[in-house]
Length: 209
Image (cartoon, rainbow, N blue to C red; front, side, top):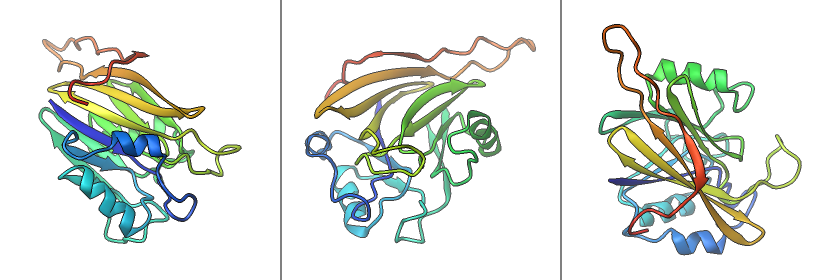
């Protein structure tokens, strides 16, 4: 089992001053093996903070990141899965499922993680899994009216199965839900095996979390 923190669009200090205190109490060292960040960190201090949480941190570049050395995209192998990561500048219109699917095919990714919209999403489409962790700080976005709901995701990866726990700060309380994805089996005798269906529901947090 690998626990991966998926986080992004923090916009510290440009649009907000810090992560919500209730999130910081959850994000402690020793529980998370890897961080995947969809960008807009935006400063070195916030990046250094992420590095205190997990030993392995992957960041793609958002339009407001100071560090121009962050790549625009990444592909990260996880056991039998390939995880693609982008900030989302490549997706027009923002968050469009067909454009996300085209990019996932181009990257040969089973899972595509993207940001930019400041809204959490997790869904299965064309046999692939798409995750947008939203904005961890609930930073304002010109795409919507008002501030976003602060959110991040924790992915529990076990072989071809990913259980994604979404943490959202709603009216001052942390709400946890989950979405499950199983990568479809490869075709046998030219007959495609059935794809695993994503299922959402109330979540029990992963063991040890």
